[in-house]
Length: 622
Image 1 (tube, helix red, strand yellow):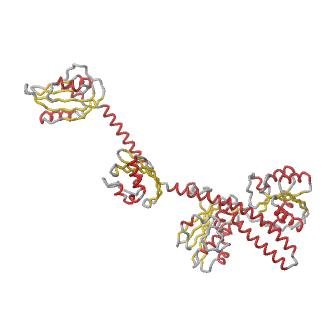
Image 2: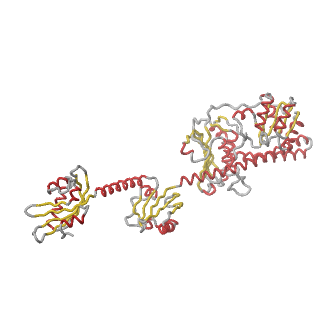
Image 3: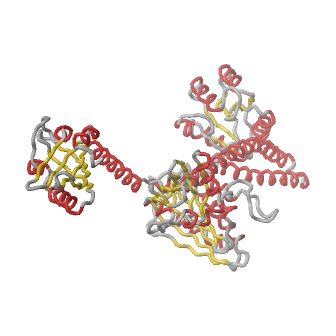
């Protein structure tokens, strides 16, 4: 092509601007029409080398002139890119190629070449660089870990998040493959998954626990003609939260079941306890009969304690929270704990001075601490140390969010720590479930920790447990700080055991109804009417104005106890009302006012419990 005439050259170059510099006594320049157009000149314009040189940006001008001269003197090809300002004021990128040749006829030498406007190409390259730079910044700052593999499984790029998660710094060895850097992956599903992804051109998704990274990992790989793009991130926190949610739902289901079982069982215990009281009265002059009735009563009370623990776990026990000095309570229990625990167990109390009072039921807290202490004793058969400490703590939102039904705020913390055998991680996640125990058969009911859990949650607090086999176990109770100052407990005066008033009993269980009627009428002297449902009770109240108190169960078909109490109060404003329930709490829908307006007597109740509750209401309140 270089031996063709300049006319032929320019015709073949078409839009590419042909040119020639002839070297003789002086230098002359030939410019094709296309070249003139590129530089912003009209066709047939005659230009000199100096004019063309002035269009080249100063930064490139020395280099271009040097390359042209070198091409002429050495006979080598010239290939260069530079920027120009055109005659019409526009800016362009130019690509020039040139070759030196000799004219056999004139014996003159010339440099013949072509130039092309590559402004669009340069702009595209710049945009690609900008996109590439932005992509790189994005990849480096994204929270997901990311790396690129080529078709030979070499690590082409690894971002900062990946290096951090993989605990690698600096970058992997250049030229090394993923399998060289992380040989353990050859034995994992990732190895086969990556190969299948590239072979079938389909994405690969995988979740696994990495012992090397000590994290649960979620990974996605996307194949391309160049290799594989891999995104991965830690899902450990999500896994932990899901496990806690599953555990909370599991325990909530168990709580509902145990609550309903305890409710039905309490109805039976009410019958047994009530009739045992009646038998003791009947056989008060018959030693054997009185002893048998006492045994029945004692068994019923033990059954009542079991159901109380079940209801504590289900968060349906009746609590009487008040501002309580936790330090004084813990100190007062020291002697009891020393007597209860083995002589080779050292009891240490560490209390924080100026500890604020907690809003909690004193007797339930005593039971919870005793439960925890007995568990600690059983975990230290050869002796050890039991430490009970108190402190004030503020739980942050971030920490509280890790546990269901736990709110941020101020708490009084009671920590019960032992130096015993500890609990395995497998068993640790089940310890708050009712009937779960690691003790030998016959040495534990499995209700101790579950009742502590229920008590803490019902008290609007929380409980956590940590343990390490061979080291010991620590249980932390979080109890809400009281909003009121400490106040002395007011002891109730002794109340009469019976009366002459007319009482309406409402209970859908015939045996419970009959037992209550017998206790009230035969032994306590009340006039008693008994019905099986709320609708009948309202009808009786309309026609019998002598009824002074209604004693009704909460859980009934049709009108429940709360609804019946509201309608009865509207019908008879002066009527006094006492509720009873096997759930030991106001478990049905109610307003906050109901909780104080209608007192509740938990089932199972004894004759003495019923007598005191009735006299308290009849003599002192509505």
